[in-house]
Image (cartoon, rainbow, N blue to C red; front, side):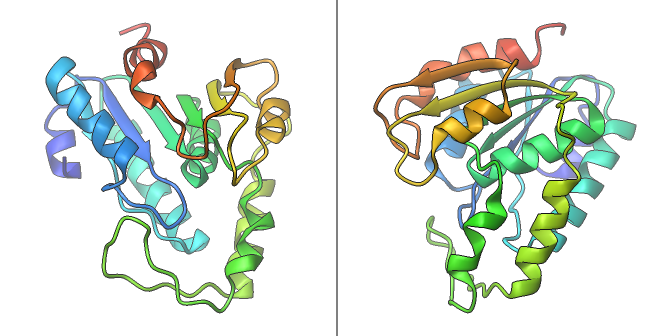
Length: 209
């Protein structure tokens, strides 16, 4: 769904899906949710941008997109973010007071980014792009992390699995304390069985629509 298509459907619910680091809109969860919405909730507009791994670029593009949506889109807007996309969902939700579902989210992405500095990086989902992070990208991410207030003002639902081999879900449990949480034993970073939560997350995001 392009942004122009989204804007042509201004009164319908808009679900924005934000993928993880080195992932893309072609990721399994993104495509799974897109197909479920098409089959079950065709009234919902689905928008999943390709997010740059460079924090400054990503912040500028996502910030502009959400600014446009909040001005031009008359229907409710909800965010779903996985891993790094969970960080971006939170960053945007705090700016615009939007509801967000965060799936095995990265709370402080700047902590793992130094591991990738200077490497040629390609998306896990197979697109023919190559990225190379620099120290300034870590610094930019730290500045963005500092923009999120200590007390969250958005409305969140944390979906996490303790078997996540990439991120420690206890950090997310603490960060989203006081918000709705579903933390499961087992699983992994991809969040096994995500399809079980598609209808409930739509209800959570668009409860008032």
